[in-house]
Length: 285
Length: 233
Image 1 (cartoon, rainbow over the protein chains, first blue to last red):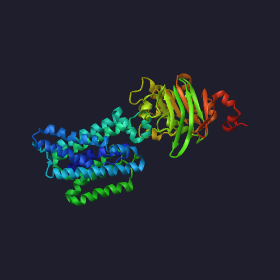
Image 2 (image 1 turned 60 degrees about the horizontal axis):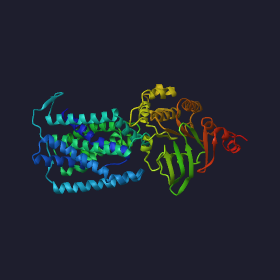
Image 3 (image 1 turned 90 degrees about the vertical axis):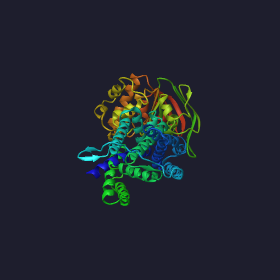
Image 4 (image 1 turned 180 degrees about the vertical axis):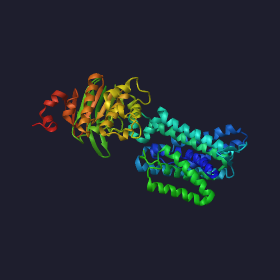
C-alpha cells in the first residue's frame, strides 16, 4: 500500500511533467526534447538562490520563474522558424532544434554546476493517510501537483482563452478563422509548460533531489507519459501519469530501477500498438 | 465594403487565379458562381488570408488586408465559412458557437437567434460537433460565423454535399438571413440555380477569371449561363 501511495505521488508529478509536453505537441506538432532541461534549470536556479541565502519561498518562486522565462525565450527565438514550416518538416525541425538546446543546456549545467542539486527538506511530522504514514514532503508535493493540475484543467475548460487553446489543438485553420492568435496561444502554452516543469522541480526537491544531469531522463519520462496518454490530450496525460507512477513505484520496489525504465517503455510501446490514440482511447485530436 | 483588385493566387508555380476584380457593397448579397475547380475557393482563401496572394489587393471597408494574418482579418469583421467547415470536433455545439464570438462574449440573444434559425441544433447543443451529420455541421459553421457579428460573411459552398433535405434547410436559413438581417453576404456556389435564387448579383468565375457578371435575373436569362450551368438548352 505504501508503495502504491508513493507511486500515486510520483504519478501526479509525472502528470505535471507531461501536461506541458502534450499541450505543445497538440498545439503545433512541436515535440520539446529540452523539456527535462527546463526542470533542471529550475532546480539549479532554486539551489543556487538558496545557497546564496535567499529565503526558501522566494527561491521557489525564482526557480519556477527561471523555467518559465527560459520557455518563453525558446518560443520567442529558436521556435519561430520551426512554426513557419508545416507538417512533417515542422516536427522534424522541432526535434533537431530542441535536441540541440537540450545538449547545450546539459553541457552548461553539468560543467558549471556539477554538484549543485535542489533539495527542499521539510521538517514536520509524518502524516497518517489511509493507515499509511506519509512524509510531510510527500503531502506538500501532492498538494502542489494536484492544485497545479486542477488549475490547468480549469483554465482549459472554463476560460475563453483556454477554449481557444483547445480549438487550436482541434483545428488550427478553424481557430484562426474565429480570430484566435495562434502564435500567442503557443507562447502562453510554452510558458505554462515551463511553469509546470518548474513545479515538478520543486516537488521533486521536496521528495529527494534534482541535479544537473537529470534532464534527459526526465524528458524520456515525460515522453512516455505523453505517448501513453495520447499526444495532445491533457486528460490522457493526467491519467497516464498516475498509472505510470504506480507502475514505476511497484516495479522499482519489487524488480529494480533499470528494468523499470524498460517496463515503462514497454507500456508506451504497447499503447501505440493497441490504443494509438492513448489510454483514454478517443480521437487523438 | 469588400473590394478585390487584380488578385492573383498561385499554388507553387501554378497560378489558379489570374487577376480577379470584384466589389461587394454594404448590405449586398453577392454570388461567386462557377464549376468545381474554377478558382472560387482559392480566391476566397486568399481574401481571408489563409493563402498568400501573389499580387493584387483586398480591401475591407477601405483598409487593405491583403497581407494581414487571418485572425486579424476575422477580428476586423470578415468571417469566412470554408467548404470543409473547420469545426472543433471534440467540443460541444455550444462551445463551437461560442468560439465564433472569440475573443469577446457573444452579444446578448445572439445564441438564441442562431438556434431559432437552425432549430435542429437545439437538442444537439451538448453533443460534440464531430458526431453531427454534414448538414448539421454546416449549420453550426454558419451559426459560429454569425456569432462573430460579421461585417461581411463569406460562405464557401454552403449546401454542396449535403443531404437534399438539409441542403434545403440551409438554403431556407440563408434566405431568412438575407431578408431579416442587414448582412453583407458573399456566397460561392457551384449549384448555380440555387445561388441565383439567393443573391442580388453574381460573378461567374471560369478558369480563374471573371467571365460574366450581372444581376441574378440577368444571369438567369443569359443563354451562356443557361447552357453551361443551368442545364437548359
